[in-house]
Image (cartoon, rainbow, N blue to C red; front, side):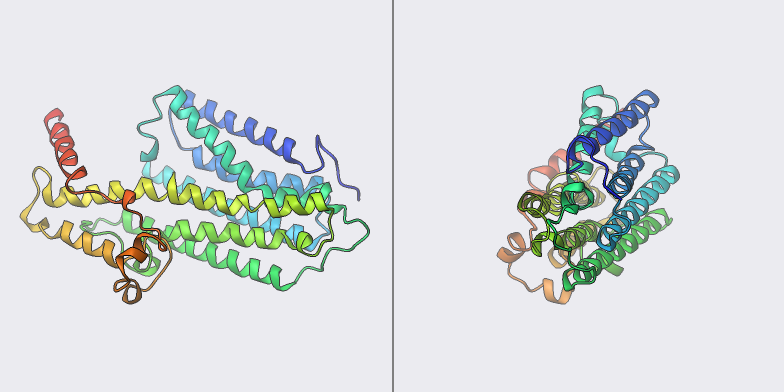
Amino acid sequence: MTAVHVLDDYYLAITLLFTIGYQLTGFAIAWTCQFDKITDLTGGTNFFFVALFTLLAGHRTDDARSLVASLLVMAWAVRIAGFLFTRVMIVGSDSRFNEIRAGFFSFMGFWIAQIIWVWVVSLPVIILNSPAAAANDGHAHPSFGTGRDIAGIIIWALGLVIETVADAHKFRWRQSKVKKTAPLQSGFWAWSRHPPYFGEMLCWWGIWTICISPAVAHTVSPAAGKALYGSVVSPLITFLILMFFSGVPTAEKPQAKKYYLMTHGPGASPEDADVWPAYKAYLRETSILLPIPRSVYRPLPEWMKRTLLMDFTFFNFNERVDGPRAVEEARRKENDV
């Protein structure tokens, strides 16, 4: 069957318009009701619908590579949307939005960022399923099952396992009633401070690896080949967002502040005197992102941890600068109660 051409041969415009409409509808509901229960659900399901639409509109269900790549995106989307929706329903709210939910433009800014995130990260499968990539100038695409396809599936599967297991492990740990005087340090969390982020990065590198096969084999037009190669922005933007914006930075300092105050904050208990020193030891021996056994990571030189292994100093809670501020803020909150 012939692919349906909608606005452009790459499905870029229609998928962007759909994403804008879908996310702004979600924003309107969330702003009106002043809750964040559908925020992550809307993001995850957007990935699902974009992959499904392009697969069906491009009539690519008979192409194994397009079908597999689309199903992998949809499986990842169902997993993350389902997990985050279940979590927020159990917990009741998402603390990430506490400061921005009340401001119209600040809250809208998050949803606009989500539009960009969903659309850009979906580009490999959007382009692969598009009429432009299906037009192979008389040459058959390489049969599915190449070494690149297998490598992509393995990378994706490894990422999904790490992300899923680490998320579930952390959620169960948080829901337990045990006093938490140290971060979770078992399972994948023993080797990485942020294993779910690493897993998500792997998922999108795996999907991109599968999607570029027609470009590598030169069975698409030069323009379509460039577009497929250019869709590397998907795993790259995933890395940048999780490493420098909405992922690691939103977790590192707040978590350090929590343990610092357990030792140095107003009303700190003598029994928690070792919490902060133990946390600093945890930072020294646990990789920030890449899962590395502690016996390997601990003795590595500091310069390597701060550069190649990306434990940059701007992620750190500075005792001399951030410490007094945290204590003063805690005192003000105590006095306001």
